[in-house]
Every structure is written in C-alpha cells, then in structure tokens.
Length: 134
Image (cartoon, rainbow, N blue to C red):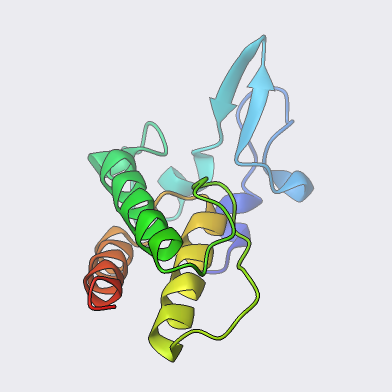
C-alpha cells in the first residue's frame, strides 16, 4: 500500500485531516485528533485507536534518544537536542555517518516506529550497538 492509503484517508469530523492535506493529526472542536481512519480501513488493522498502537512510542523514543546521545558523543551531531537533525562538518567513519542517517530517517519520519515497529526497533538497537564500538 502506498503512503496515501493512510495519509490521505478521509478523516472523521471536520475534514481538516487526511485528504489532500496529508495531515495525520488535526484539531477538531478544540481537541487535537489523530486521523486513524486509514489505519483501520486498510484491512491490516481494525482496532487502532491511536498512533501509540502496540505501545511502541515510548520504546522507540527512548531508543532514538540513546542513538542521539551516542552520535553527539561521537561528535557528528551538531546539538545534543534529540529534535535537531543537523550534522557537524568533518570526517567521520562510514559506520558513524550511516548511524547518523538512520537517526535522521527514523527521527524525521515522526511515526515513532508505527510504520514498522520490529524493523525500526532492530535498526535502532543495532545502530546503537555499533556506535558504542567507537
């Protein structure tokens, strides 16, 4: 299934999410709502109630933070702030650069692992393990 299956699914409520907005979250009657219509309508899931389905968000966020800290320790991250995805200029081992790219990919995705929890979890754990060898 393509990205649009979920990101363009018609939201419930006022239509401020989904559709051509691609917004997965939107405000409805003063409350931020998550557009889970596509999640439940694809045939893959029928009971998703939030984007923290399977309770993966806290675990993935903690792993992203660990990777962030390792990359900052190695000097490739410009800031210790986990929301900053900028690198410092310089020469770094290829594995460290690859680790930084993994950090950017997973962090900038902003799905907190929901797109594929087992894969994201393993990429983060393996990357953290590799960064600790430097």
